[in-house]
Amino acid sequence: MITKAIVDRLKEIVGPENVLTQREDMLTYSYDAAVLDAKMPAAAVMPGNTEEIGDVVTVCHENSIPLTVRGAGTNLSGGTIPENTGLVMLTGRLNKIIEINEADMYAVVQPGVVTATLAAAVEAKGLFYPPDPGSQAVSTLGGNVAENAGGLRGLKYGVTKDYVMGLRFFDARGNYVKTGSRTVKCATGYNITGLMVGSEGTLGVLDEITLKLIPAPAARHSLVAVYDTIDQASETVAAIIAARIVPATLEILDNFTIRAVEDFSKAGLPVEAAALLLIEVDGHPAVVKEEGEKVEALCKKMGAASINVAQTDEERDKIWAARRSALSALAKLKPTLVLEDATVPRSKIPDMVKSLQEIAERYQIDIGTFGHAGDGNLHPTILTDKRNTEEFHRVEAAIEEIFDRALALGGTLSGEHGTGIAKAPFLEKEAGYSSILFSRQLRAALDPKNILNPGKITGVSTD
Image 1: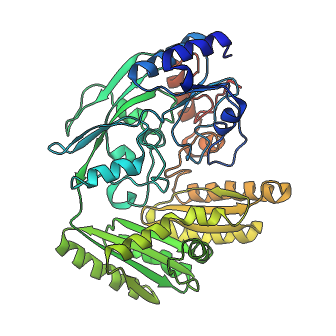
Image 2 (image 1 turned 90 degrees about the vertical axis):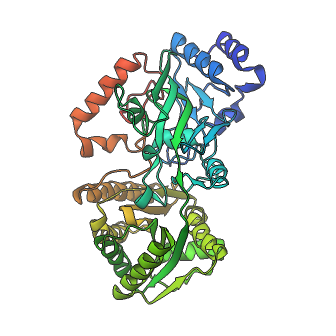
Image 3 (image 1 turned 60 degrees about the vertical axis):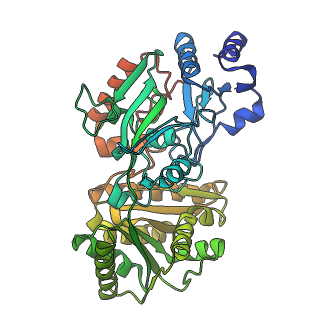
């Protein structure tokens, strides 16, 4: 319980203006982008430096106060929904890019730095930070690390875990831990860095992140392939991968999503198309030219009705801006949007697409399908109204069947959205009980009072 004495102590640590206790503020921090019930925390605190972070964690440990760290709250599995008696730590003041090292190609940042802010800063120096979650304009790097965020470029460049070189964080007792290094290789001790990435704030509170950078690609070739059936589009995805071509991005949109996006963005998308593939190859100009031609030929061979190639950077940017607006566009259509990210091996994309169509028909619900088809990560997006109890029961049944189908195809419950609260009940289906037990034992050893983001991943809450 957060008493007045504890609130006063927090004010001493971070300043009175950086401690929030009013109900309207707590309402703001009671939910995230997942369709889950909100929980009102008791207070929120905004530390501004390393010492303040450590002192706040120590107060929570000494008083057994549940602590949830929150960046922008764009996560989609309930990872930042706090405990009713808990404290929310906001990272908005921890927003400094500490270093961009051009010689050794790495960046050091605080957890509250916005993803797109770092991407723009390193691009100005001719470097490249590839992870690009759809929420990159507002999502924070601390949140990206906590959720192991992916994005459109995951096919070729990987996800957040592939760029985290080292971390500095506070454990549950308030001890300062350093992991990894600024070297290309590091085999010292346990791979604590790898353990922390994707742990959703359950193992420590981040203070500093070291991220790998790479040279910016010299050339890009972007195109939109139009299809009369979604089966042709999904089979093209499998054909491109089978041809040993790895585009930087390979995205799919079904007709439902195309219409929503075009109405929202006015990007000039062909609303009569059954499906679109948005593809970009990048790298050395000669390689880009060769691979671009191969991709176009494959699209035609697999039945593309037409192919539109971006001729300028402006046209290219318009294509990707439209794709990134898909979630916002769909969200306008009905009061409740449930965005999933069941992921399958890339060769199984056609099977998963067919399954989604069958599930939508069986449960009589609207599903817009888009996503990172090139790495097997689809985003079936269910449009509904949670107030319609009967319909939402059908939605919940459909979600469980989507998970079951993805697992049956050799896939996973989540490609990039994490486990959080939303997928914790299904985790045993994929990982088995022994895996959950191991994780709970690990957490109990590192956090015996269960204060770090309780209830996430392994499902043990304090409420």
